[in-house]
Image 1 (cartoon, rainbow, N blue to C red):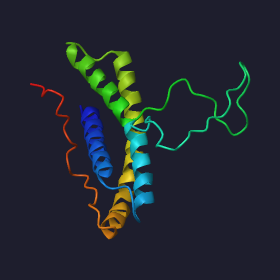
Image 2 (cartoon, rainbow, N blue to C red):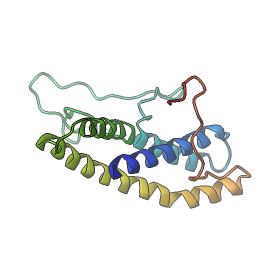
Image 3 (tube, rainbow, N blue to C red):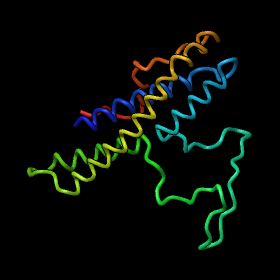
Image 4 (spheres, rainbow, N blue to C red):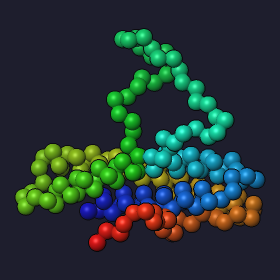
Length: 166
């Protein structure tokens, strides 16, 4: 339960910060700091799989020939992309539902999955804490630019198109 709570709270706070950043004008003295913070935040939440900004092009290295090793300095493609807060929270929620559905003790596979999720969440939580440590500096720049500072205590905006669960 603690895993589900921690992952949910972190994801909701991150989504709130994303929404607040998107609502601010992306101009002025704080622009670079805002973009940097927003990019790091998007990577953590999984929203970094967005389309490149208008006018931006994404340079991709040429694909290696079948069976060939990647060129020096280029990482080999991994089997799965690294998990982000959104994906991990969904996995933990599914695991929680699976474990609480049964009457017996969790299976060895469920315990192993929980251990893996704990480790992954610990890594993402460390990255989250580093990001949050940078928030006061960003807020100083936003305040100096006469923009609203980002508040980690605000709830994320609700999607009016989604029905409330009962």
